[in-house]
Image 1: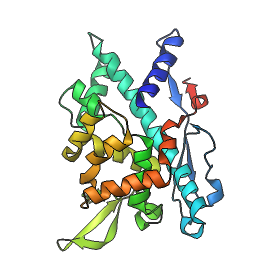
Image 2: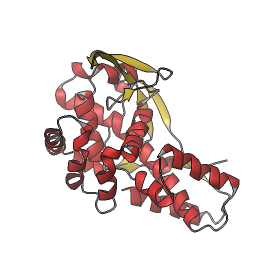
Image 3: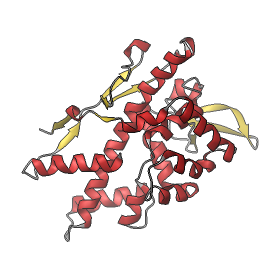
Image 4: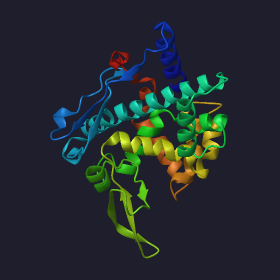
Length: 266
């Protein structure tokens, strides 16, 4: 799917007939005061809406709660993938460009530092993304289908820890080695998704995953490379596989941002 996004972006760029034209993704942030605000997914083309503070799923029938959860999370996944595909396209263009402008250099070095990359090829490797089915499976497992305190209070989908006293965070109710643990707080789900992809792209534990993504986009072949995400290792991988199978999450691997939300920048 990430290759497909790059192709779409390239086509938009080439068909404008003018390098000065640029397309931007028109997104919408929705503060959830009622579950009725969540737009249920009924098509493979998805509106780029990102939600914040989704609560009350535990009061819904299980099938509806799961549908609401996926409908709220997947758009943010697709938004993150779109922006990464856009950045990867620019990097591919830089590979063929002999003279870089100051803007080109700043763009490259900012991303290189963010992803702790060694060079341009390594940066492209680190910016690859996993299938939607894997993201949704991990989101469901890590947040308890949207019922964890960190999900509801901090938009923290994946239970990301905080090690920085100066960033927004929530104290956990448990300790590790007699030390208080904190989890990050995000403005909305998009921030949590962005952090998740950055973690997969930078942590040494996912080096095998990054190289596997060069060869396949099959979620079942990629799952074993996520064993270090949890202390449960192989049991965690088995849980993710069951989550994908029991909820038919592979169907969402075909979902993408609706192109009508790509608008020409004025």
